Length: 134
Image 1 (tube, rainbow, N blue to C red):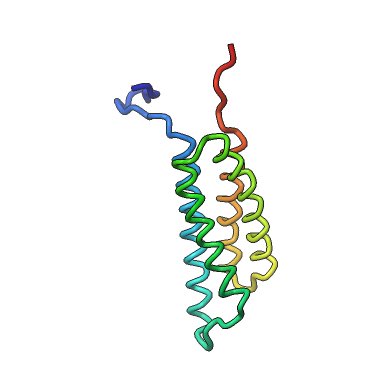
Image 2: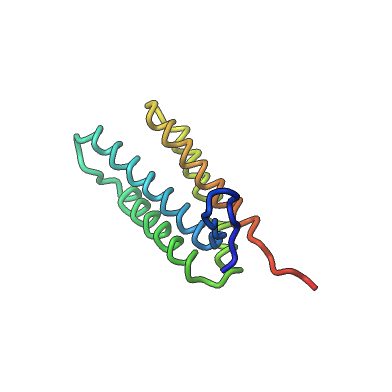
């Protein structure tokens, strides 16, 4: 098993697979997204959502996030990389719209982390290690 030994700690710091990192970042983004929606809904407990766009876009977005987690772990590397390079900027646009619509301090606070996770996802997919040539 290869890993980096931290001097003086006696602990091996194994390299984490890119797939695992991407899946965990998508999970973190999804958890924040769910929390943000739940918190927003709790503050607006006057009427249930009846807007057709909301009723279809929100679940579709959740399904795509869930599929990205699974696909990041089991898909072919080139397709996983491409899917993340496409999905992260799309979600980044959603996050920017969230910032534009934000009115409460907590929305800006959570929005920073939305952006952070999507940028990290894009960066990690973009810098996916390549096989050594030669």
